[in-house]
Image (tube, rainbow, N blue to C red; front, side, top):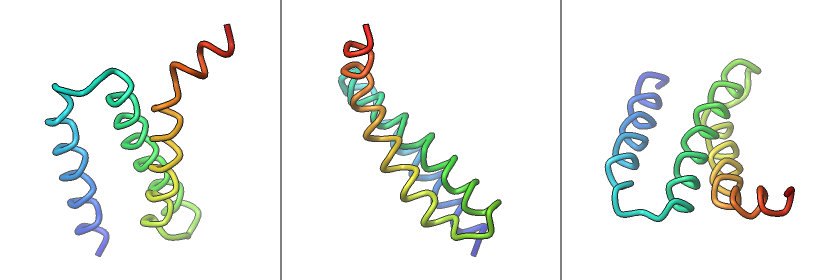
Length: 78
């Protein structure tokens, strides 16, 4: 089960990275944030004894939102 999860996660990340060439910088940041958040969330979910899939979902969603809003966040902090 774990091997299958990590294989699917890796495939999704690699396929997402291939499609980045025609994306805007905001879209690229959202995708990168989502991938990093999913990886971190899955790791934290596994370490804490919870579900890596739930951790990946929550982390991916949060990372995508933060990545997509990164420019607005930086502009507001200036």
